[in-house]
Amino acid sequence: MSIDLDPDAQSALLHQAVEVVLGHARHVRDLPIAPADDPAALRASLHAFDLEHGADPASVVSLTAGLLESCTVLTTHPRYFGLFNPSPLTAGIAADILTAGFNPQLAVRSHAPGAVEIEALVIRTMGEWTGLPSPAGSFTTGGAEANATAVALALQARFPEVATGGLRALPGRPVFYASSESHLAWLKIAHQCGLGRDSVRLVPADASLRLDLDDLRGQIARDRAAGECPFLVVATAGTTSAGVVDPLPEAADLAEEHGLWFHVDAAWAGAAVLSDVLRPHLAGIDRADSVTVDAHKWLSVPMGAGMLLTRHGGLLHDVFDVATSYMPATSTGANVATDPYTTTMQWSRRAAGLKLFLALAVHGRRGYARQLEHDVALADDLREALRQDGWHVANDTPLPVVCISEPEHDETFHRAVAESVIASGVAWVSFVLLAGRPAVRACVISHRSTADDVAALAAELRRARADRSP
Image (cartoon, rainbow, N blue to C red; front, top):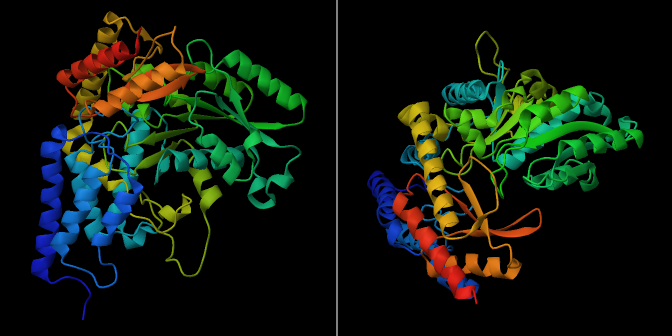
């Protein structure tokens, strides 16, 4: 006897879930973007679920959907201008349903050759659009795992003896470099992999919030003189706070000059390589040894679908390949995708790449390009409207991140403006510090956002500022 529902109940449950998702998409514009977080009330509402005996599936789905809709910052809302959490495309949602239903196990190719080859195709295609020769890579849980993989590859490339002897096999401490404006997952990565947080050299940003190459060059020289072991330079293509692109060609030159691995963290802005218009803003990314791109950011697929792309596919095997008797024999042969568990930290995993594959298969690179260019145009309109309103635009980027400030006001003022906009329910923006200077930040990457939504945000920022100005 199976614990599962009977066929009619299965059909009813899945149809109900689909109708809930479609209904949410239809009326999300009318909902408040940010929830009121009341832990006591939320926990009390969970008592409606009987986890001991179970309950009617329809009521369980209805209650769960209600909790998700009322107790989530609605990144699906067209006026969510917050972090890089866009509304997922319907094609990506459909792919997640298919993935859950067929449940391909992507440890080895022999268990799911279709899904493995689909992911390999997407990795190759994204790598080629990025400009990497003979690209390889893997899907990851997100940018943090992809960046951690890049650190492992860089260590292997620079210090092969680490593979067996560990860090104690080295004459000094390995150190690596990233901008102070980069995503600080680098500190967590260094901690987790045993390098220690002090091994991360956060290089100051210049006046434009870009990686300061002169300071970087000086830090490398000082570290080598002190007996440290530099091995990696990270450049960011689209910082989280300001959407700034580090000087990629010059950073590549410097890394090559010093014999260091060159990694580009393009977690959200890497999507720009799909557009012939926007790709030049990432010039130099093709010189990277490895690149991080998250499809669940500007490519608008459901969480989570990170990617690590590299021109050094063999190193992935050097770092992650193991042999064990309980795994099927490794697939071999010309043009046969390798067993994923031999090229990634993950072992058993779901087919995260199917959602990007289905979205690309439905919309194509050109469809994506039109959407990305539209987002950039909306951000340009917002930037100009805010300038006209007297705001100071605090960041310099061609990408759809707009940071504004009132230089004569302090952090408290800027936080209050952002909180006022959120509390209004009209839109969602965030407070940010740019090299220590306060600003209000808006990111325009939802395929649901329109010119009217951008205009509404500008008006709401105008009101929030007026309410706090003398």
